Image (cartoon, rainbow, N blue to C red; front, top):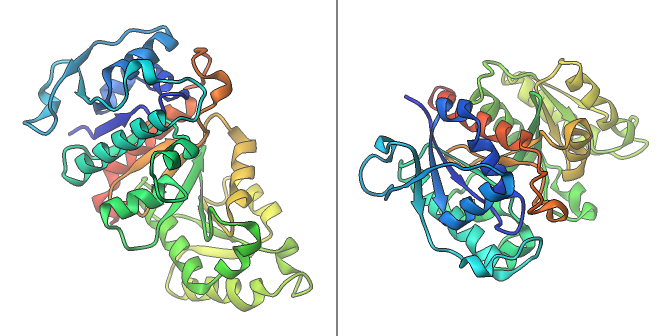
Length: 334
């Protein structure tokens, strides 16, 4: 059976609706999965206008019966924002409310087995917070909404290179306090499990150091000696295929050369800078720790080009493909 992918437009004021329209204009996308659009019809129509394409959408109630039997592109229509209230390239409560409401609906459908995975257009965090998000990012909202109590972290991937984080959306001055055996272990297990769910039978993992030159034997910090290296050795003793800690300015060279599949970074920008330099328009964010695949392009809402029709669909297509691959391998790699 094809994977059943639910797609939501993201922030109405950004490039999400346009990207979804460009994604759906590719016939191969429809061959790869059964697709359910979740959201306001006028948002998807706006995206099609921006992308200069036209796609027939067939209304259905996905809560009633098998929506995959619909002849054509199924849309579970919602009313989250009036067309006159959409503001391109602006942070507004209405835009944020629409994005958050559609996300919650998609989460409920995935939780209830109506869809297998979610791919969403970019969110604007400021708009989500203005609309009542209550968390620093959408991942923590998803975890609370679904009752997830285990370790969660955004994972990023580009051209087969994956990263997870020991710390994420926190101040840089607080990072060192997050470098613990428990958090490193959880970050390693999360990326290992996610890579297996993406088709890697035995992922090759490397842990990045926190300090310059991996601490230089304690001259530039003791975290590598006292915490990171002992944790890596413990994981190796448990047959996890991981090494490190490697200086963060060289570990990505190993990945770029194809010597490693995943890198565990100590903080947000340590991995993000490297991946975005290698291909900003192709990176994907995977919401790690959620009980089903949730993917999105790693770039943002791009307010500077919203509505112009010039958005690059590459990362959105990659996010969709990864969601499909993860559905196919999900149960076997649990």
